[in-house]
Length: 130
Image 1: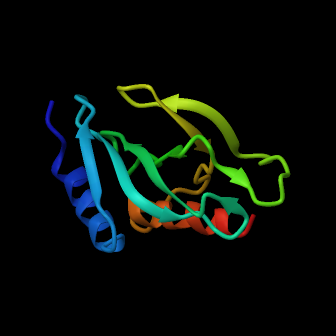
Image 2 (image 1 turned 45 degrees about the vertical axis):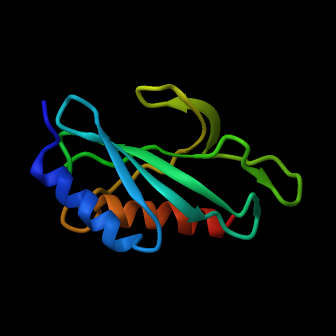
């Protein structure tokens, strides 16, 4: 099954929102896609300072939350402290890529407002505030 037009539009919005980097995708064969934003800032509390960010936009989008998000597996806090709630080492995607999972579910999802791009920005803002 090919990627739906709704999800292709979401990927276009991501490319516009993150225009200073590359946004790629791989179809998930269910109408959705695995998306990777090549370089995003992780905030002052983390090292390295940047990472790729990946996530799956599933076929029921926009009614389905874009969750979870993944970044490089070697993410560490600058102060040496534990990551805390919402972080887990894991792997994801069809290639089982090692990653740090960022669990930030949208409990009050509003499909008109909560797009894949706004969700990625919310996750990055959450990292900045750690």
